[in-house]
Amino acid sequence: MTFPYTRMRRMRKNDFSRRLMREHHLTADDLIYPMFVIEGTNVREAVPSMPNIDRVSIDLLLEEAKELVELGIPTIALFPVIKSDKKSLLAEESYNPDGLVQRAVRALKEAFPELGVLTDIALDPYTTHGQDGIIDDSGYVLNDITVDTLVKQALSHAKAGADVVAPSDMMDGRIGEIRDELEAEGFINTLIMAYAAKYASAYYGPFRDAIGSSGNLGKGNKFTYQIDPANSNEAIREVMLDLEEGADMVMVKPGMPYLDIVRRVKTELEVPTFAYQVSGEYAMHMAAFEKGWLDKDTVMMESLLAFKRAGADGILTYFAKDAARLLKKRI
Ligand SMILES: NCc1[nH]cc(CCC(=O)O)c1CC(=O)O
Ligand SMILES: [Mg+2]
Image 1: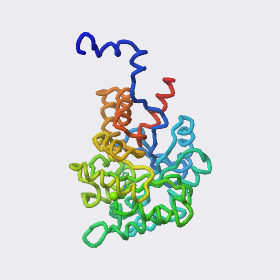
Image 2 (image 1 turned 60 degrees about the horizontal axis):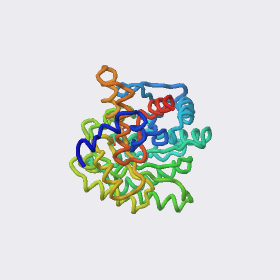
Image 3 (image 1 turned 90 degrees about the horizontal axis):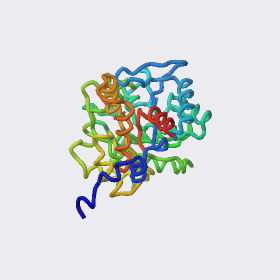
Image 4 (image 1 turned 135 degrees about the horizontal axis):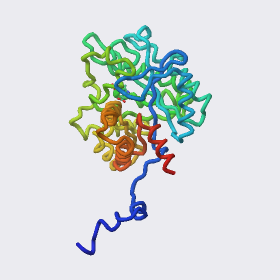
């Protein structure tokens, strides 16, 4: 049937019918809030390329965690800012049982047991060169010895009480090795969210400023381990491998420029699928909001709804708090 029997605008005319046919919804349940943690007490440092996002010491992290719980945000993701005297070629600090992340996890789980705590598994905050792994003389990131260290890092996080370990390093085989170790050590319910399809993206710039690895990385890049932005099938293969190795959830990263990959993963593999709206996406939105070129609340919500439409089950986003506050106001 065509016009006038089919008038697409009929359903759009009133609020009730628009609401009735709405296919996707964003709720606080969909959100994971990434936070940057730093040493000290009562320390709060702004990240210039990420307006409204601060690096905070553990005491202040706990205050913000309380807010997350009140807002109904289910999970926090932790990223440490490591002092340069603790960085090394072998990244030994990454598995220090009393390291910054390990202490932050313990403090969070003690204060807010119901809040999910997700930790990043990768060596870039801990290496003197800012690469995610251990390098040889030519600067090439060595896969297998890096995995050995990632396994130690993941176990130390699990021991501290992390609910989810999230390897973001893109080494081959690390999910299986981490899963083996967690099982062997009795951490059978520690979840693994694999950064399975992580692209070699320039959108990570502000994050590298935030954790202080951009200076170390210099003109370096991560092309030998992260996926080429030109590829799509390769991402599906990466996701399949991580699932076979024991990942509970998979992630696509960055977010908005890679929603085609989110859709493919969800449709082809039908598994819990997450996406990371990364620092550069946050920065470009915030820049436009600050200039008054885009409206913050509506554009932010539209950007997050896009992830749901693409099939994401959840979104790691620096907008998590702002979005949850807005959702609460609307109810
Ligand atoms: N393994 C490090 C890591 N974990 C999360 C991000 C990026 C997050 C963001 O940009 O918000 C990165 C950066 C990178 O791979 O260089
Ligand atoms: Mg892989």
